[in-house]
Image (cartoon, rainbow, N blue to C red; front, side, top):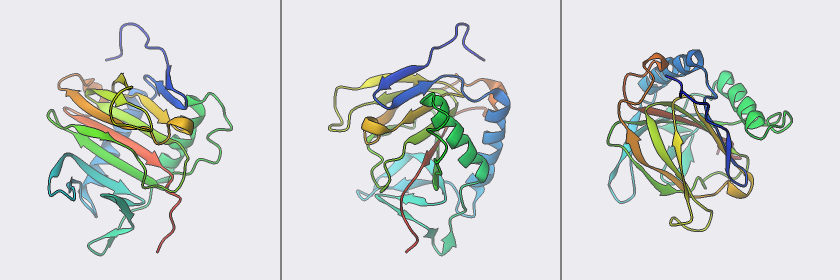
Length: 217
């Protein structure tokens, strides 16, 4: 269900832009159906085990590259990671152009990694930086399902200053430029807030597109 009043786009920090309701309902349903396929494999969605031995509460699956703390892999257990579909690349280009209100900004944007995270009602994501990439190209983040609090900080510290942003189903968040390596996290998901028409009965899907700048070893 769309908000009763329009939510304005917002520049949260230099290079970090929130665009509400960017994905329409049909696109959300298409992405949910695609995420279900990607979650089944050939490398199934799973909770990542951190070097401390703790399992993350978020479940993840990768396209193009598999993210493992704190590096990218082209294969897992001898299975090659599927490539990023062209439709996601095209969405990424349009997202960057729309976020920065510059058609040329997204022209050369070619994400070679997509990370799909699923949050259930209790999942959280601690403050972290996306810093395993060698490229400084923007990160594109798409949200589907339950609303969450997205905490967007600064490049220097996990603590304040930060800004809490409410991300709803269909929202776009892009961060690049001075904010490309800012700390960010998800301290809370609000169960039961998803629009039933989005195709996801419960939980939150987050699709992030990245340019790694890496080459096959």
